Image 1 (spheres, rainbow, N blue to C red):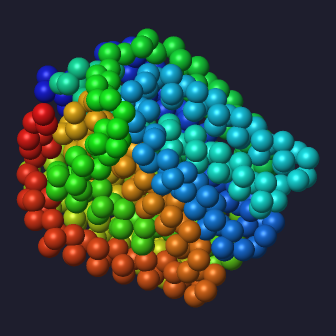
Image 2: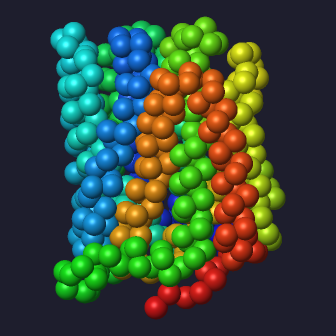
Length: 414
């Protein structure tokens, strides 16, 4: 973990509100990972269709895009903790619906996509609220430490969640969904127990100018624009998550547990990189390392696509996760440290759409290409595209490339 200015690795946890937030986010991320593994495997097992796997991501992404002008404003004008608590309960209800369909034997694409659409609406409101809430729970000197812990929390869930999800699905799909419901409810309770934190709400009257404040800030701050868009196109092209059930069952001949292992490998790499960064933090040339990380992510994607060996595939995915960790940490630091609190909700809403486009829409891209060209070519082409993006963005955003340190904002926002 990156140290706070006082050298305390646990500075963020000296604040009880953040401690509750940390464990709530971990439980919710854990639940999301379990559901993701269970739905993906169950859908492919029943339909055998790559396009349906891609649709899983698209259906969850569309609400973030459609509601982008609403969700950020809501997070800036209302209690972020309350929004996050309500969204957590909605997530639990959606998972409960998937459990009900599984038990009743009515699991089929259309009703599942309806539930996933509601999941997407919930996450469209949840993500900007949660991402904007953390800076309200710790003083500024502990913020960078909190960001590091946030990233590690998500990555830890990304490691253990898919493995547990695969093991639970191996018992039964209903077991996996039941555990996910319990984790969502516990996360909602922890969020509710956080005392209402101080928050600089948006003071502007409701208007298009106020609603578009996040877009305007990102457009004007080229470093933030470059970092967000770099991640968007790199993962949009290089993401292979949606196709893992195909690789697990048809290429590597693994079962649900093997799928969980593949899904966890990037998280393992990310945690290892987090430990390395804790020992050797990016004190200088952060921008250069960010671009190197994206390039390595692309190379790892190509190796994964070409591999027919389980060990090589897992190693490639772990390298991808380690490389992605660098990009994620730099991007989150830029957004959290350089965005005024009254704009954080709207900026994070835009970031949510970019991240959603890179992940969920990337899954749709992969599923669509796989249905036409096959899973292996779809992954390899995506990896080559990621390498091209790293080169183009390094040339097109020189200010981002020249970032030296992440210890303080480049400029103070008014």
